[in-house]
Length: 114
Length: 110
Image (cartoon, rainbow over all chains, first blue to last red):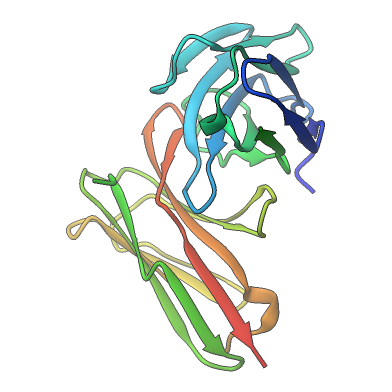
């Protein structure tokens, strides 16, 4: 167990809807990264939050947005869902951006868009 | 093309056999991570390699980093069904924003 928890574990939405995924970081970790993993692929970096500010973003459109709260928990919001958004969404926390420490991953939220 | 290429893409071995998974980067490697993933679940950290020539072992899994070849290998000795899963290599690009390979799917049959 990494101490990173994600909710919900599974979610089914229809095209055009909006979704919010949640992540609680491991205690003491102030950096949260979100990844999207499509079936049969490796995780793709979406964005990272450090002390409530976005600290880097991958190649994802603006309809993917995030928040980090003072307790370092985080949300990933996706608007106008598309079929290709179906994937496993992983949250990972770390102590500081740039620290030579491993990322601690949650178990993920499996999102299906119909 | 992928910045991190893993080979093979999938592997089916008999219990007790040794196996090797490779990860090759098209860019200079500064830090290389190995993770294991059960299907549809989160990533479990295995090892991190930072220096050229570095080799680390944990139980029956050994990983090596060849900086000159921009390559890392993961070797499993005497495989067991518990080793089954997806093995992912990840490279440090900037400030622990890891990029990942597409993974190697390992099945171990009795």
